[in-house]
Length: 275
Image 1 (spheres, rainbow, N blue to C red):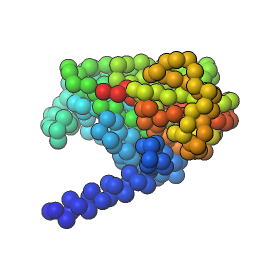
Image 2 (cartoon, rainbow, N blue to C red):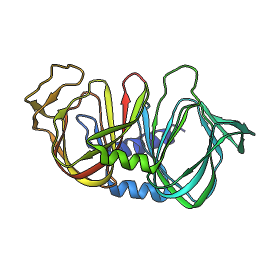
Image 3 (cartoon, one colour):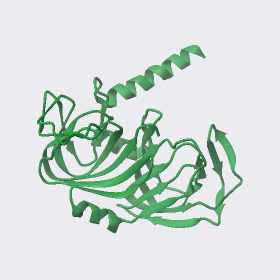
Image 4 (cartoon, rainbow, N blue to C red):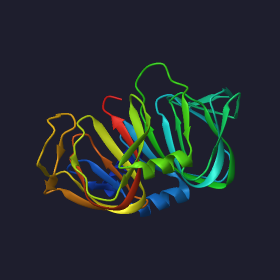
């Protein structure tokens, strides 16, 4: 038993090191090739306890799921499906700590998802892929929810609203909650250096490309806001070339800067510290 535990631990460390582009600062890059491989089979790509990043691939209906501790923020990449949320779980049974599975849902709300749609499901809310139209691939960020009574809120943000966010400017907040927010980003030119002292940035690139610099020394700091300082540029940072399908995770307190952007679009989730 001990040898299998050791092997599992070493494998987990290998996954983390293969994903980590910048171990010294904790910045994580999951490139488009790893993401594509994930969509081909589904699975967890990153899990640090505060949040998880998954790729999901479905070709058939699934079981009802209820996660007591984690929410689900889904961005549909390919295909379509009908997801039922809320209601009452039929034949629900615990499958692990804070996890329930069931056969079906009665009295829930039906959500039809297509590419570009976003579905946000709060922790404790039943959800069920009732029907899949050939296949559905979707990217998921699962933030850990604060302790307390679960919320039953479900928010379906359709493709039209998401696309409008991409066209609307540099950043459009689609949903803002205490533990996290969901947003779109659109850039055609460099921006200011940003450092979020209490927020982790998770970006999934949906179009275009950018040169994104993290860490290093910030020059030209300004605005006097100690929680959200800005700057002109970064010296000595790590440069990342981001293209469609890449994911980058920037931990709280890490300077980051779009040094160059070419019609760059991203679907972003910001996780607030302490949640």
